[in-house]
Image 1 (cartoon, helix red, strand yellow):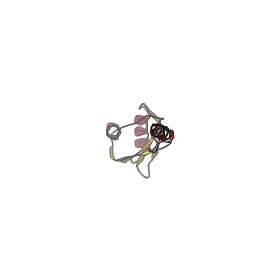
Image 2 (tube, rainbow, N blue to C red; image 1 turned 60 degrees about the vertical axis):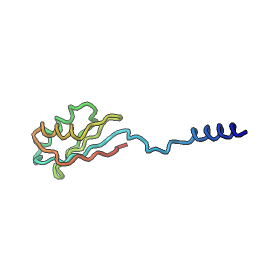
Image 3 (cartoon, helix red, strand yellow; image 1 turned 45 degrees about the vertical axis):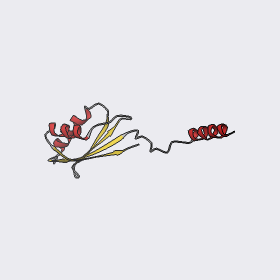
Image 4 (cartoon, rainbow, N blue to C red; image 1 turned 180 degrees about the vertical axis):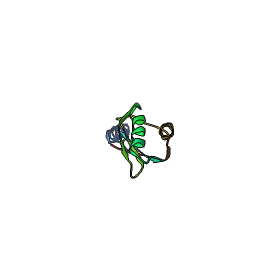
Length: 102
């Protein structure tokens, strides 16, 4: 009798939905960029970012001096790598914020 109760409890526990936080399906990175002051600056940064594997789209906010990268589903980009890409484009990334986009 006790074995049946334990087995029943174990099976009901396995049937419960996961209590863990759901994994992020797609990420968004917002990068503050120092020195990006004109349309030419923005386009040169955008061109570098659009070449990267896993980047779905790139949005530039010139007035806020930010670059927003929306990543393809299940793709990730390291903050240090993004900082290096910005440096290679001739600018300085001052802050990278990574959030879940979906």
